[in-house]
Length: 291
Image (cartoon, rainbow, N blue to C red; front, side, top):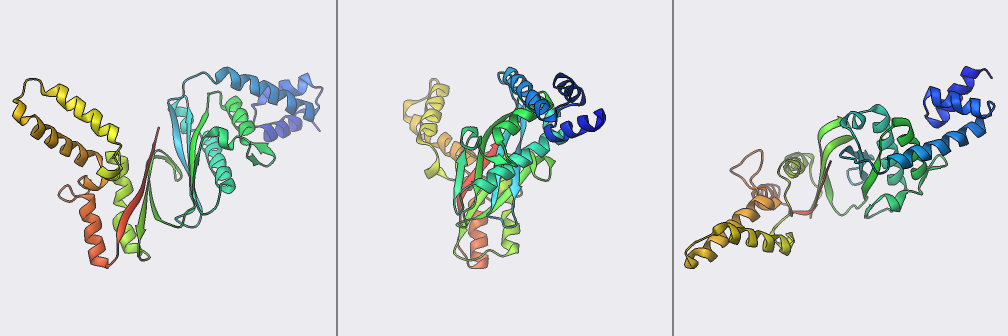
């Protein structure tokens, strides 16, 4: 095998650059197996040196199967927006998300972080090894931050990707899980597609007041009190109640005004669709992922 053929084979198997492959072969007397090991060791060292570097960019990767209730979302960060749009990074994100999906538990929603999936394998390589190789190849710190696999048939899921880098990757991704007593028609699903868009645009903190963290309301009450200054004591409770009501309306999905029709709330949309189609509709899940 000629030198160029050896370099090409080594590059295809490791993803390393031409100069690194050439040096690896030179250091190991053109022995491919030893050259691969040498590159792996050097790659690990390179990756370790980059692990402390800040990762403020990245993407939200989606892997969809043939059904709307069988998909996985993975949040992966990197250092620069340039790399986030890079084909190698996009392919890496797709591979990782696909591998996680194939290994996640059936019939449930599974959530986790890198530690939960680092030993999963694709073609004999673990996710941790694939990550190390990609860091070495791309030259930036990369972090697999979190994932969620949606394999539950309990809900109808609606997804939206905002600021797309590809058909399955974006800066912001949102998911709504709707429960109904009937199968939803395509027409109803189409009407409901505004909901994940609403989540991406308005970033509600909870579905409704009941699911809002009580601490959030306590903190907001304290902020309102500090902002009031010298106010007639008889009016303090009334003012606090009014401001809290406004805060809840702006930060809970069901109480928000629709981005497509500010005169209508999300809850009114669900009410109208339910009445019109003689079905029940209830939002059970709301997830927002962003970089």
